[in-house]
Length: 489
Image (cartoon, helix red, strand yellow):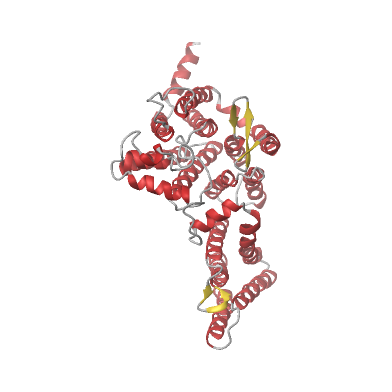
């Protein structure tokens, strides 16, 4: 018995208390922000009343501490053994959610249990991270093997698809963070490059779709530039992955055709020069297929798929924007890209948030003294837009402290993940880090008007039990794994 107690004390001594201190600091600042964002002048400073947002947040924080303690008491072997079971259970729950949930602002992602509501998508992130980590620790696992790569990507895409069915696009996009983990574990850089390229195609193609190219009315600037980008990216990838300068030069000569067509349309006969660029993309794809057959190299064929896939994606963007995304999502994207000016509609939240942050100045107006937040000018100011409360009440200094704490947490998670001797713990740690990074970057970005408003919470700050519990589970399961790593070492 004494030996067992000594072992337990040894494990607790190896707990990463530095991360826990940062966690508590973020919780404390988050609670103060909820107090400031939800404060009513009739409340008279009673922040612990369970009938108020700040009082309920105390409940969520207290239960999070209990949850964290229970997680640390459970052996890390339990998470490994039940990883697939938890993933399967949450996928079934995500599938059933639209049928069980009530419509809340167009979203079918909240299940009501008594007087409370939970969002399964928040907890599914933990299950997905655990499942991905479990699969990655298989013998001879490698992201360079197509079977492992496809299954790993499928593990991530399945919850994304199920959450999209709940009309919760923002929560689904969070799962894109797992691709950083896959890249760390050896996924081809070209896949990550393809994802970045897709974002560029979407932004350029949509933003400049109605702008004429060089005064040539039939030619869309967005369409022509995207097609030329597809050609340029294909040339870069060909040169990178095949190192055949001669074949790359042949394709570069094909790429000159759209330039010639553009000059012809500008000075001789106006026509849609994008047709020439589209033909050049097709010719390059066919040439890559020919090289694949001639050289018997799959890389050429994969490059042709990149070209053809890029073409399909670029022309599907406008259809997705107009027919798949909801009207408020379309408007938010257009406002963000500068295509529309809607200060009273979709741009209202961001405009008021920017006003609130800017009004805080260097030192802020002080606790409970923010006028924008007290007068409820900023919608969702205690959830998705809570960072504006930090800016107004604590100013630039307060914002810098919050950003610094999140940066410390993310860097610490990278450090902890890198020191793991077990593959599962390392992959899970990077999954946790990536999810935190995505939430922080996108949430702060949308408050500042740098990213689309997709409605995701700021970890440990936004009001609500589902997000707070979800982030706590993510973090403390990893801390439990890290404790075990130290013991094994």
